[in-house]
Length: 121
Image (cartoon, rainbow, N blue to C red):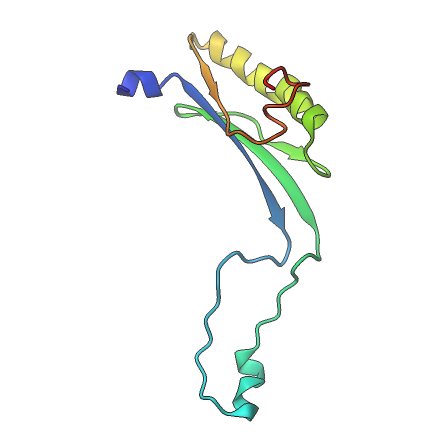
């Protein structure tokens, strides 16, 4: 594909952000003695499933950023369609107002994206 072909794509993705969650692996090097193993300097606590969480969804097309959608709870087909109607279609209309044509909406193949309810199943 050419650069002009790639410029037609509008990209979208969602991510779950958790409070006190760190996706990075932490390495601790210690000597193999029993008392050093549980020394406080070698212990890093982390909430695995606790704390606040927020699902966010964003879009971009070229150098134009779309709105961020904040989603409470989990994403199902109904929520996905609502985000498309409330955020994505408005973003696409704004792009058309800037004379962007032939927009290709790119998404990954999450189950809610390709369900029967969305018309992609």
